[in-house]
Length: 163
Length: 165
Image 1 (cartoon, rainbow over the protein chains, first blue to last red):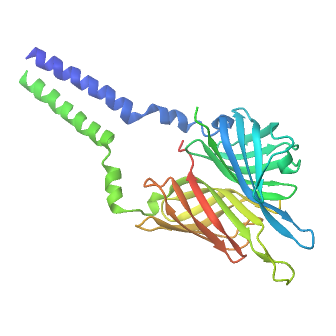
Image 2 (cartoon, helix red, strand yellow):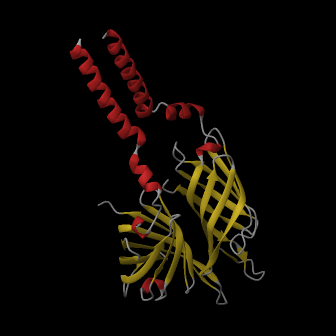
């Protein structure tokens, strides 16, 4: 009889412990007080920008599709750099001249909104700086819009590269 | 002694039952059978609208389609009301200062199709903009579809859920 009580008590304690771990989930409560930060973007990301260069020279004015891709690196502290910055236009892959940059900056706010800048100098951006605004989402992803002075206008999507 | 055993056994059964409910989570299965509703869209989402602004060049019959993209932190309240902050627009190489709105609306149908209405937003959106899409995941983490307004703006959109903190 005592052994039965001992076994039941042990089982009860084990279930109570498992219940606490899986039901109460203390990790989420810790996260609740944190929100997003620059550390929410950390590591290597595939970053794709889709948009158009828009010319108002006349004649003719025009809007030409120009899309870009790069391997971007976010250091988790507000600095962004990139390599293999390429652009595609008119059936060709462009990327002559500087195809990388360092010295970019980004800020991730507590509500997960994002603003970042790429410095001037990259050839496919006609040497102009780039501004981007967006949101950091689930799945190690960021999405938003961007613009350059050239003028290029478009959107971007950054997805974390598997580590 | 027997009373102690019965008491402990009863408490154990209750724990097992509660544990089973929490871990096995039959609730999503019930939701799957019920279809989608406004409650399927709930919380903060990063929303990007990729559009073009169709315009004719001085009566020449030549039309341009410069990019006009919009991004926002969209909040769906689970009951059909949509608000947005950090609403920014990009056009002709300019990022417009972010603004906000609070009187948008949305409807999620049982077949998981979604219609969204975004009101005009100063500096960013000139007209009431309609979005039609579909929830791509059962738990409502992502929506994709088309967008248009009489400006005329035409394009596609994607909304993806932000981490719940």
